[in-house]
Structure formats: C-alpha cells, structure tokens
Image (cartoon, rainbow, N blue to C red):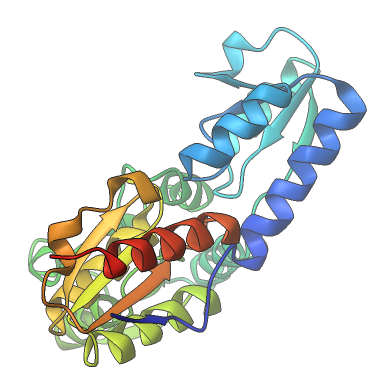
Amino acid sequence: MEIRKAAVQGFCFGVAITVKKAEEAIASRGEVTTLGHVVHNPQMVESLKARGLRNAESVADVDAGALFVRAHGLPVEVFEEAKGKGLEIIDATCPMVTKIHVQAEKLKADGYKIVVIGDPAHPEVKGTLSHVPGAWCIQKVDDVARLPRSSKVGVVVQSTWSGQGFTDIVKALAAKYYEVRAVNTICTDTHNRQDEALRLARDVEVMIVVGGKTSANTKHLAELSESHGARAYHIEGAAELQPQWFDGVKVAGLMSGASTPGWLVDEVEARMEELSRQPV
C-alpha cells in the first residue's frame, strides 16, 4: 500500500509557540496553571501535566502563582478576574487569534454590527465574543435568515473554520444586508491543511487524520476528506488503526491537525506500513 502524506504536518506555528512557552514557564516556575487544555492533543496535554502544568476550571480555583493562557486565548472578563487576584499572567494566545480580536474591534468601531462565524461553545470564539459584546454568532447558512435587521454587518470567522463554510455564509449575508464587510480570519495553516485534504482526498481511497477528538481543525479535515471521495478516519494515535480499514486499499492518505506533534504522525505512518505488509 502506498502512503501519501500531506505536505503540511506537525504543529502549526501558533501551537508551537504556545507549547514552547508552556515548557519554559514550567521549567522556570515549577508549577503553572492553565484554564482548559493548552492544546487539543491528549498526548501533549499528558506530557505537560507530568512536568507540572496544572489545569483548573476557573480563576477562582487558582490561589496563587502563574496563570498560563493557552493558544485559544481567554475572554476579557477572565483576564480581568486574574489581574484582580494578582496572578502572574503568561499570555500564549496564538497571534492569529489575537488578530481576530483586533479585526472585530476595528469593525465595531467603524459602526458595523459584528457577526462571528464559529462554534459559540469553542474557547476561541468565546474569547472573540468577549471583545465585541452584543455580536451575533452563527455557524451555518440557515442561521442568517434568523438574524435581526441591520444596516451593515462586519464579519470575522473562527481561525480553524472551514473555508467553504465561511464563503457560503458571507454570500448569504451579502444577499440579506445592504453592506457587508467580511474579513477572512481563517489562519494560513488551517487554509493550507484544508487545501491538502482536498488535494489528497481525490487521489486516495482512505484518509487517516491524526489529532485530538476535541480539535475543531482536525475534525474539519476529516469532514473535507469524506466530502471529496476518501473514506476518512479521525484518530488520536496509532493504536486506533484497524487492519480492515486497509483491506484492498492501494493508496492511503495521512495528515494531521494543527495541534498534533510530528512524532505522533511518524508513529501512525510506521503502524500503517506494518499493517500494509500483513497478509489479508
């Protein structure tokens, strides 16, 4: 069986920065607390936990020391609460996420009603919404019909959102509102990985997508692969691979989400090669 790997693998630059800052913080302070997992990858989370990265549910659970802000960022009110408690704040928010906050605030200052495209339960989106109180958050084209009237709307999008989903919603908004100003804040890494998924999916029979089950960008890669002809499996590690997935398969694809370390992809590739050599 031939294995075709996506050109873009391993951590995106934002996650790489966050992990490096977390490792440096642990090394210099011994114990650091974060709200929610630093990245959406269970192996990386466990590794950092073993070295001293503590996870708390809220600022109220952090009595002292340093609060580490993960790649997704935190809502404004959480920052203020942490400052009020006198906590040291180590801000490792991804620069692409900070860009979304800035763009949304600029649009609001220019008089636009803000529409945030993304999952309202996702920590990144929660943070964005806190920067532009009163913004509307939508996830699909059908949501546009339920939005109130407005003279003009400004649009930003979750950094890991589907590019086609963003385009379709903006078209629907443009058909409804007199003036629409949309800023495509999907990060470059997400865009490149989605392009790779589309390219590979047309040429492979099976696509293996490696990444945390809670990772939005990884989930989108699997969905894109399925929608363009490949049978896709979203896994977190090599142990999940099943021999029957590759029965009769001549070409398989392999790609990863933005929070997946490169060594994990290598492990999956090695196991795929082992399975391809086993007799059916």
